Length: 164
Ligand SMILES: [Zn+2]
Ligand SMILES: [Zn+2]
Image (cartoon, rainbow, N blue to C red):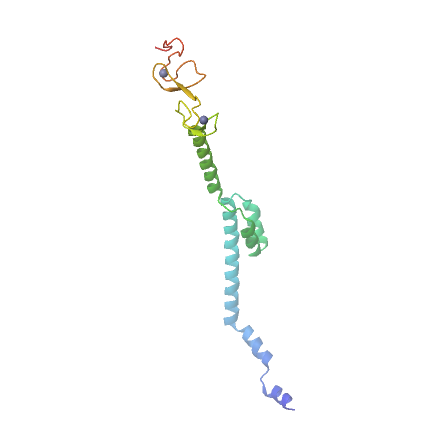
């Protein structure tokens, strides 16, 4: 009996809720929230596209995925995207190539004991293996097989200068 009374005394709770739902303030704030979500979605589509092209991923495809699957598309992209920017990886490759060339040019190994030797060493400091011979005219280090000095153009056997 008391339960029934409570129902009768209460102003219909459903009526309160539906009144609240139909109030213009709620409708406007609901539309604002919706607008915010749409703005966020559109900016995420743009960001996904831009970030993918910076990283050399398939930017059009990822932009499309972010558009078709709002928020989740971008989330998936964040997980699988390439770890670095395209420019960075190109720069690193370039740096590596430069480093490699420097290494090839400046560092030599003794053919006998495999220790590091400098380009202008005449003999290996570790095993005294003959690496180069000095030019008979200008004393610059020459490869053992060179017949003519490239620095002063002196023929190493006759001692004559080839180019005057
Ligand atoms: Zn050596
Ligand atoms: Zn010479």
